[in-house]
Length: 489
Image (cartoon, rainbow, N blue to C red):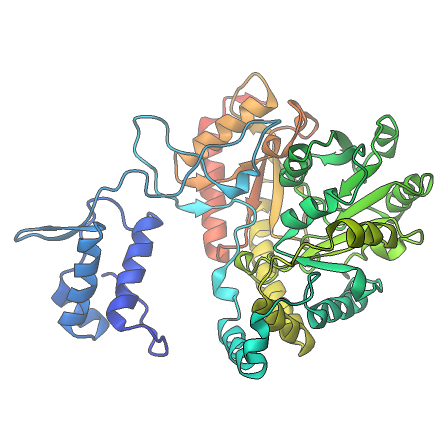
């Protein structure tokens, strides 16, 4: 019997809750094409609601085409080709970050319902602090009223910048001037803004593999991007010195996507590189520093920046919700002066209402409590993933444990192919055909062969899946790969 969770505290009518639940189950592939639904009477009895309530939900689903009614037979899930959101995979060198979309089915084939979504950056929406956020929104509208609808500080609300500065001092190990902070709609927007503060001739060195959106932003703005291979400590300074780059982009506290932590010696070596030329800049993207599961949080590189040459970028999209779209950037004095003279006319791209809500969320300690709660839940999922992967220790190499919301898994025995990228593509397609979505490492590389040093590698995210589903999904994943494997690397 179909079990629909009915929330008596939900402001929406019960028929709408039933409609939304069934609709979403169809779009996620949990209810499959031609699957028969319970009769209105049977579902009403099961849920202890009136038959008219269920009939109203079914009528809405019928009118929108999600269900088909067959005379004297009942209600069935309609065939809806391409309903599940699956988009083309990116190619090395021009890739979109693969976590943004799934692959489409091959031409002429039916879409395979998603059973397990292991892509990185998938968060659990159930962890969003809805009630408290809603209460703060009510308070903000009551207290500030119409004043929030006028143009505020173009850099962002002073109260929010001050609250973030206090948070950084307490949790990231450095003190910053709130006046040097810019609030914007996510790290991607801030990188575009930052690029306009840099010298027009500055080229950018970026880790390989890396967060490819950053690469595409710099390339799209006409900059030369130099991919730099990494060793076990991160970006290799010897390779960096062979380039003409005057700017480097890093994720030192938790390298994305491999998960390594940059040791203090390597951080100092890169700071020394910057110190040799006052025009050099290091961009530190501290994308998920809140989620570390063993030991203390890794101090920010910015905390070692005695020469004021590090730009620090952070976001709340990972720790609260992607839709919040609030990020921030702390500029060194030299770049802040450039910003004031060239870009001071830019208005903040985040609603003043949302900024004020977040300022209160930070100031009253709610953010810290929320992160602590999420960290506990994500740690349990991380541990569940590690536990099941222990059974396959001879078949895999783990990378990036104890932080973030994904692991990188290098496979020893895999499908055949002419290159590592081709092997990874075959692995991904093999899994996708069974309803399992993953990212592969070469999709995060700018150069063909950029991931070859690591062998065939997939990324397994655990942010949106409960522990028991993580374990069943990984077992199925390994069974599929074992069944199809014909070559040992």
